Image (cartoon, rainbow, N blue to C red; front, top):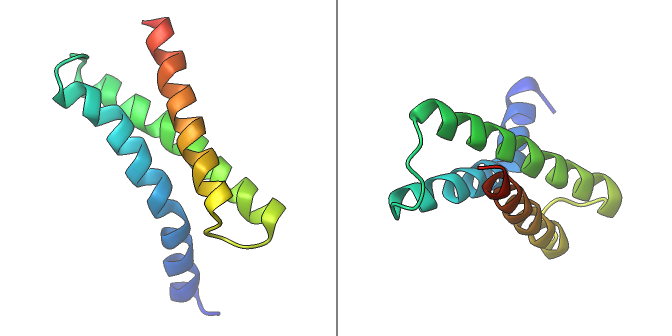
Length: 90
């Protein structure tokens, strides 16, 4: 595997984490429930992305294969837990 293949595979691994993190942060903002600055939204998306990426890497290590439905279910659960935790802090 050359360098570009490695980057492509890492991007494919991180893409679901990025998508879920951005949706979870932007959806309440677009519905008008949370009005925070762009800096706060970016920080929340970054923290949520890191948690989601750790779940995906953990699923890859524990299950031995990327893209298992259990991993994606845990990804959504971890993202929702982070959103609820942040909501309690506000």
